[in-house]
Length: 294
Image (cartoon, rainbow, N blue to C red):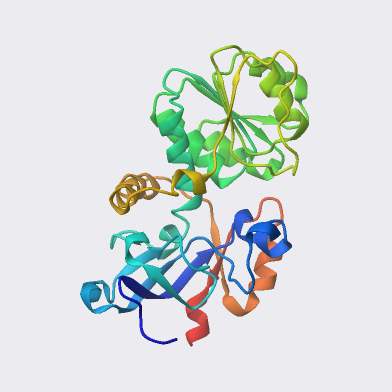
């Protein structure tokens, strides 16, 4: 691979999760932003095996090599400014998925406070929505409702105190939208647009995903504020210090939370793992990249 560039680390990857955002470039959905050849993967955990001389102390330590090359490869070169150290007490299966969903949830709750408020989550069976619901209660939310598509997620939602509402019960959803202060929407599409149209003046509808593939279109006379959230915009110019400080807040939250079940796959079985990740109710699929070194 050649020598490590100044200011960079070479990381041997251990575990990487399979997220919907990882699969979008693979399917061609981000063709306008994807330059080939490229590697998939936005997060994961590994151990530093080489470093430029001034960073020798990093060798042997676990890090999250973020905002650089795709993480779905056995070795990743990473700018040290974007390498997040992993505390010893955090296991690999927790560390590898500590970036996209947890940081998204934390950043949105920072920007749109929920203390004393009623919160609605769409796509509530997703990992990100679980973080939002659980941490919203920790920040003093009064009620959290979750609009779900798969019955397999209902018990986990109830365990976090999220009151589940099936996506097909549009009447109840829209009745509740009238009393909702903050909606975090991962779906987009017609139902999301209808929720936005029912919310009161002075409330916030935050769109952070389009799992339906359709945009949110504000109905006539919409009173709530429509906000957009994209993690890449949030972290685009964040300083290395602020980046590390965000994870100092995330680690204890993840360690005390019962995370969704995870299933590691040998990296050679990545196609089967990708298929498994699309099945409703399936555990979080992880790729064991260290298995390729055996």
